[in-house]
Each structure stands twice: as structure tokens, then as C-alpha cells.
Length: 252
Image (cartoon, rainbow, N blue to C red; front, top):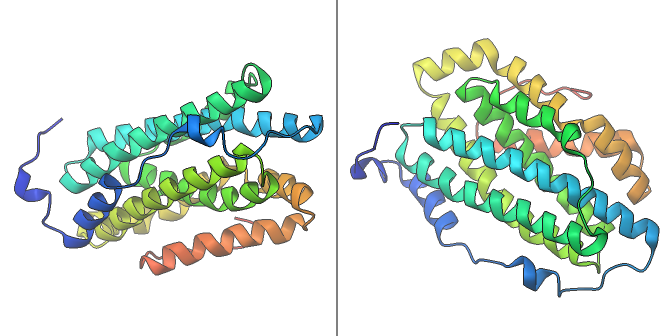
């Protein structure tokens, strides 16, 4: 790993501003969150919360590994610094979901094998593909947390999703900023033209978006197809706003 010169840190004003926003964020503590709201007395709702929190522990851990490896492998100074902060966020998130799952169920659900393909899929991709898929996953997770915060409104888990989502929004900005800059370079432009659709489809596959849509539709009394389309519209809007071009079709 190459150590980077300090003058590289603020060569790009927007990129360094994203780093500063992440650096100066207001911290939150899971101990405080667990005191917000009231744990559900409904055993069905409590078990549902326990299961999604247990899976959140592993999903956030996959995000931690992705952010950490991206930080180590880049020679882009502000990106490395921002990803280092994002890695710490992901550790906080994983621990928070773990603490919540313990509070409501004693121990988290044994579901590592369900989430392991997510980690395997991320780590197998080349750098730009990993950055794209990691950013895609962060974006769809942030959208999912909007719905889950509604499903678990009044419960500490609803507040936890609120706090985690605020962090994820900053992580999305880090990833989109990098992708926008990388695709403007000759090498990045060629790699994007050749592989972006393949990487994107891998990422959508790793989200299990169809299954997520079905589950969230059941929890929110919506049509599964409408939920999936909502996710894709928001995902498309993020890429478009960042000036990133990729073909996104319904059902992909």
C-alpha cells in the first residue's frame, strides 16, 4: 500500500468536502438508541425485528470489508480517508444491529450462510466493479431503511434505521463521487464501457431485490412489483444525478 502525499488530499474540492462532512458527522450510540421507543410486546413483530437485525449485523459486516479493502487499494487520498471513516461507520452499524438482536432475542439468528454470498460476490470483483456494487448496495439499503423505519416505528429498531440511514447517505456520496471521477479518465471510461452493465447486474443479483420487494410489500401492504420499481427508480435517479450512465431496466 502506497502512502499518499498530503497535497493530494484536497486536489478536488468536492471530494474533500465529502470527506469533511463524513469526518465531522454527529455521533450516535446504540446504548442511547435502545432507550428510544419501546420494544414490541407482539411476539410476531418482535421476532421479525430480531431476524432483520440479525441479518443487518452480517450485511453491515460485508459493507465493512468492502469499504476497508477499497480504502487499502486506492491511491486516491480523499477517497481513502473517506472510506476509512465509512469502515468505522460500518463497524458501528454491525455492532448496533448485534446489540439490538441480543436485546430482543438473546442471541442473533444463525444466518451467516444467507449473507456470505454477498461478501463473496463483492470481494471477487475488480476495483471499479466493487466500488459500483458497494455503492449500489449502500443505496438500496438506505432506501430499504426508509420502509423498515416505518414498519418498526415506535420501536428502537425504527430509530436505529434512521441513524444508520444517515450514515449510509454519506457513504453513497463517497461512492458516486468516485465513480463519476473515475469514469472521466480514459482507463476508467474504457472499463466502464466494457463491464459496467455486467457489474451492475451482479450487484442487483446480490441485493436479492425481488425477495426484498416481496417481504417489504407484505410488511407495508403494497404490491411487490411496485416496491421493486420504487427501489429501481430511486437507484436510477442517484446515478443520473451523479452523471453516471448505465442501462437500468425494470426487473434488472
